Length: 86
Image (cartoon, rainbow, N blue to C red; front, side):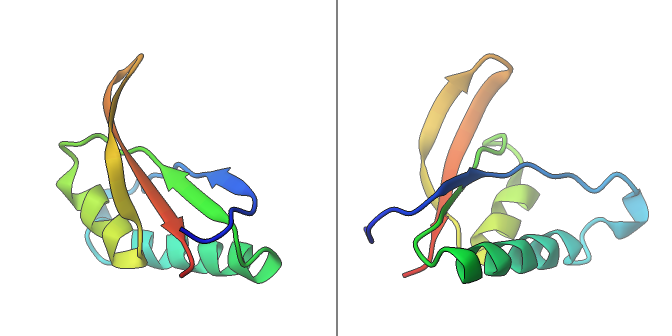
């Protein structure tokens, strides 16, 4: 794993159903991460979707996130995923 820079946690949602499953989430996340990497090439970005949310997990993997493992959060199980430029 590359040397760690800043650690940033993200969380987002698309509220209007007509925008779901059209790639907007992946595009939004990629643009945001590209801006973070431009400021700090060693930045690590983490997210923790519900392990049963296959669409969110596919979206994060499309951007380049990797699965690290699951944990029990106060709201239920969460899957920790991490992005770091290689």
